[in-house]
Length: 85
Image (cartoon, rainbow, N blue to C red; front, side, top):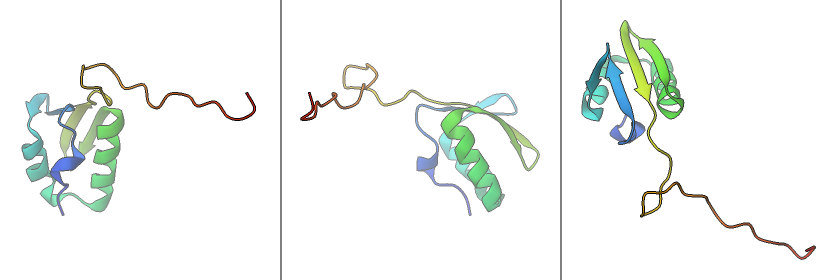
């Protein structure tokens, strides 16, 4: 069972044997993977790094985090003060 296209972020960069590949190519390469391979690949996509799956070496550079419409990193919700303050 191959991975789904949404498993690889658009902002992540994936290299196979040192060559950059598209997200669609990663999905086709994953058709013969085991469940263990898929779990490992998804983990590496999130945190970045290098892994070797079924003799193919993958190097993944994770994409940017959540950004605002202006391109800045989202800082999350503003701190709220409770009744004790």
